[in-house]
Every structure is written in C-alpha cells, then in structure tokens.
Image 1 (cartoon, one colour):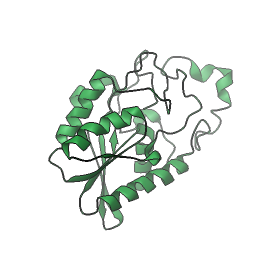
Image 2 (cartoon, helix red, strand yellow):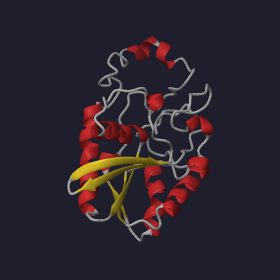
Image 3 (tube, rainbow, N blue to C red):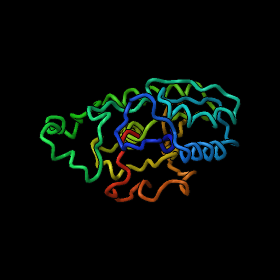
Length: 216
C-alpha cells in the first residue's frame, strides 16, 4: 500500500474526500520516484482510491508496468466532519466549543468514519488485490489514516492512536506479504524520503504554521 505524494493545498484545509485536490509539483516528483523504485518489481495489478491525488500517484507505476489503474472505492480517505476546515497544530480548533461535540469519543472516533469500518473495507481491498496478483505483486494507492489503521489491525495493535506517531510518510510503502491467503509479515519503506519536508516525516514533531492539512 502506497500513500500518495504531497498535495497542492495553499489554504491548509483538511481536504478529506473533497474533489479537486491534486498533487503539487513536489508530489508529482514523489510519484515518479516511487514509480522508478518499483519499475523492476513483479507488479501485475495497480489499484487506487478514486481521489485525484491517489490516481495521480498511481500513474507512473501503472505506466511503468503497462497496466491500467483499477479504481477501488474501498481505498478512499476516511470520512471526517472537519473536512473543508483548517484543523492543524496551533490553530485553536480544539478550543472551539462548536467542535467539542465531535471530540467526545476518540476511540471510535466520534469525528469521522469508525476505525473498524476502515479495517473492513481496507482488508477487502487488500484481499481483492492479493487475488488479482496471486504469485506476483500489487500496488494499492491510498491515504495515511486508512493505511495506518489496517496496518495496526494486522499487527494486532489498538486502533485508536496518536496521529503524530503514524509511520506513514508521504509516498511511503507499507508492504503486506502473503503466504497463501494469510498475511505473514508487514514491511515499511520510504523510497522518496529525501523529497519529503522534514516536518512531515514519520515521527517528526508538528510545527506551528506547517503541515496543517491532515486530509492525507
């Protein structure tokens, strides 16, 4: 599973499932880098979320292997009530009374698509890709939160978590290896790491005024 590249988002909104958010110039470079990284792999299936940023990230990979992109709605970003709003470090969103009703249950979470629903759809997408590429490799382009949630499920971790600690950087690969129909290992790599701004790398501390968009 590949997280898409950087998105052009000058207003710093949580873009979520909103249409029209495409890769930035840097994001396109990230996508090309991953395409080069995977060019020699035995990829026979490329799937992607229907959102523009995922489709654009999938294009270099599909082109390198002479494949069409299989759009899979199950790979879409998680739904979120804060979509279209700014909701970042230091903007005071958590102190606004009108937002409190959406923050009552972080374990579900109460502000968006339940974690367990993300697990169900993402596991369905993984299993379908496994069947489509049995004996070979598949690449699925999705979004940070759904990728992290399905990885947490597979690795038997709790699904609620601190978003700052997700290991799922822009244009990173989270790899699920199957033996038959069973996942036997999970790997992680960052083929475009040198292109990712330091404050957006996995584990980096949030910086006020930077990285305000969490619609990734």
